[in-house]
Amino acid sequence: MPKRLQVILQDSDYRDIQRAARARRMSLAEWVRQSLDSARRQQPEGSLSKKLEALRLASQYQFPVGDMDQMLAEIEAGYLSGQRS
Image (cartoon, rainbow, N blue to C red; front, side, top):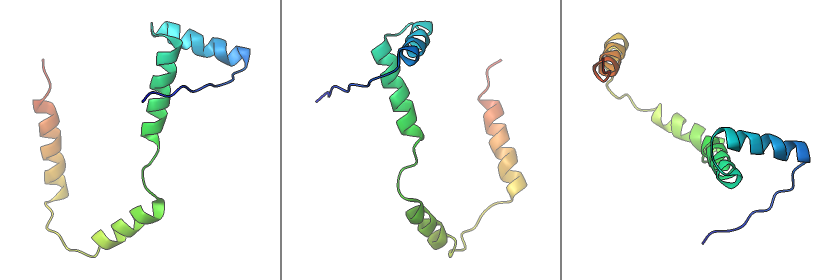
């Protein structure tokens, strides 16, 4: 269910945000929603300690890996094959 959020801004901040929204040809509300969504997606999920513990656990294993230069060359070839002229 949608919720309403009220934010109090200084006049100058409001005008700056309004200009940014207008420049992108969107409503102020849509600009704010997209900005909040973008900021939320940039926030790391999970705690740092859990992530470090997962890395410590994974580093105990000896998985086979290819040659780094070969893997990078294959990645580059994949990027180039996806380009359109």
